[in-house]
Length: 227
Image (tube, rainbow, N blue to C red; front, side, top):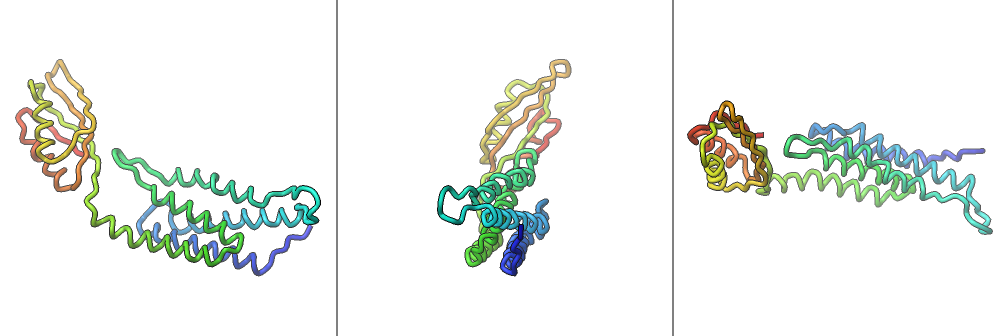
């Protein structure tokens, strides 16, 4: 059996490294766990899968036109789409009330697609997608920073077990223009203390800081923690 490794194949592999690396470079600059090398290798590996699939077709496919082809070159490429999911899932990190890594996971998915595109020789399309992805990461990040987006925080308040204390806390939260999503109450009967956990929706960090100061001034409050 002869493997036809041509300059065309080398070009596809090099372009997959270039395009995947460019997207990974943006992630690397922003300190994400999946950076330059990870995206480059994902794109390169996807390209190699496609080239191998093409070679399978050329070696074992029925080119005579009589009977079934016998080999489907698209199967390996299809598995790249589902197989990249484990890397994307590994890039997603849950930090208390927030989740990080979704953009990086999407970048890994795009890097794999770029590798597949380079593997089948779609150079122009791969170039356009790379430029679109990089511009989206750079420009839309600036747009997002200007938006007043809702955020979610966890708030825990330790207080003396005073009648009506929960209602007072909720009034303070409402006065700070925040909305309570969920409440958990823990009561220490022996020491006559309560610990109330709030899951809160807010829009700015300034409001969150204001909320802590307002709750700390409520009579009976011993400790406030915002996460």
